[in-house]
Length: 201
Image 1 (cartoon, rainbow, N blue to C red):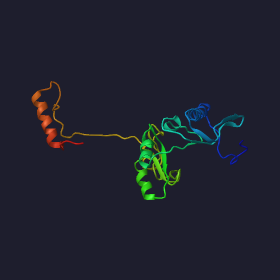
Image 2 (image 1 turned 180 degrees about the vertical axis):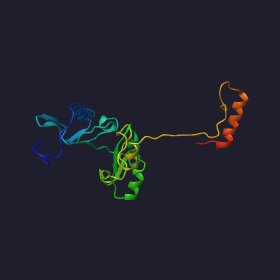
Image 3 (image 1 turned 180 degrees about the horizontal axis):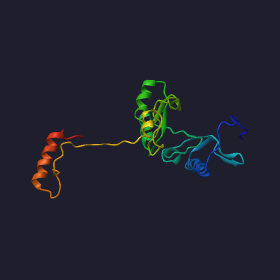
Image 4 (image 1 turned 30 degrees about the vertical axis):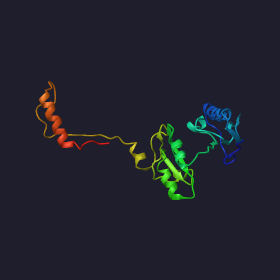
């Protein structure tokens, strides 16, 4: 139990509901055939709500501990056929806050990291991005709350405005009520001539 700063390795869970989510993910994995190597229990005391650091093996992608964000001290370990399957399953999620790739081949690790759909991906590290304050930090998909740090983190505090002044405005709009087929066709051909680039994929 905590007795002061630095007295515990894994701190308390802030909200009761979050402790329930962590427990539910672990219990569901265990019920579906996963093995708990260590941990796997919650404990609430006057000092706070705690969940033991937990390592799960024999998990698969159908389990909530692999498909949802647990936000708890759990480490589910899943076997895959190869790196291609690992990338495919990592991206098969509505979430994408952060990820990491571990390998002896740094160049291959970087290539794999570029294919992972997450806001921050570290190679051979788990949280190095927290030290790179000049880089934007934020999740993809349904993860994160916008972006912070870097240019994007500053721009979120600014408002953008598009201001257009037409100094050659005619007395009457070229395409306005009542519409005429001839005028519409002429404008369509003009747009195609000015902006048409052919078929795009």
